[in-house]
Image (cartoon, rainbow, N blue to C red; front, side, top):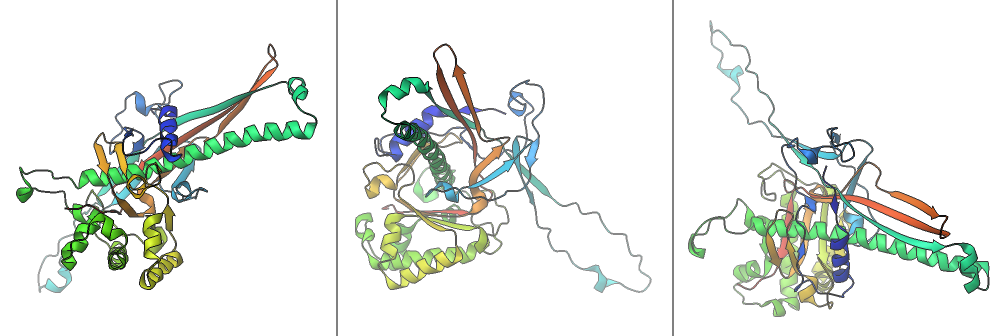
Length: 400
């Protein structure tokens, strides 16, 4: 398995999440960061364990075990852990087609043939991703520190503060990886919705059901109501947000039925209430709650579970609507994508998340007798994935 060193990317992402840099002018390159699933293991070096380079990595688990993190993004990213193996395998079985029943066509003297073998059609995807980084800090011997403090309690509080800073850095890193997992999902859906052929808008051809998965709600609203709202006017238009809440309710019920409308691979999928997630930018959530009807919609989602709000989809920038709703990345599949005014993502919880192979935490301590210093190492390994065979819809606004 290939292990991606992502310290530089994590630091760049932190600059955007902390507001040091804005997402509009700073593209994040996520190539190979998020596993999109492959149908074949190539048998090359990346399919072998990294120490000896000869043992073949094994599938560690074949189903997802959902556990929550504790942050606006990370707590909603599913995670999976397994002690042995290196890959997560997702197995899909196609539904069989109905056939005419022969029981009603039997005639006297007819020879009845034996049954025909009908093998199930199986599709499997392998998700292989390992992103590694570490934090470390060095402390001197207690005898050195004691010169700077008036009591043991004060010195202990100082050391505790250093540990808390490391823990906060680790939480920010995990949160930002979760942000990038969502951002990449948005980018992959945006790429799927691009024209695949045609010289002009009049003869463009698109991937199947692209308009169901990447939805320009402003254009759709203006088309259905014969209005001419702009992005700015829509932000404070109660009728628009009321219509938007109805649109999500309709899509939610359609996603609960078996359909191919909401995934990029034309798999027959449905998403139960238990597995459904709705992630909304907090600006949109506040706009929805201004209206009594939309407040009822909000309460319904809270009852169902899986509803949560986020302050941004890639970086907070200056905190404006423009910057918090922008995704500006090179996707894991290698496409340069800029999406603006993303307001919500509704998805099956198995469509994205984090997976863990082996022991996720590799903490260690090293003492140097020459300098009487102790260095603490905190190593992390996270494998993030987007499963585009699962249901998902991106809602955004654009003027057409």
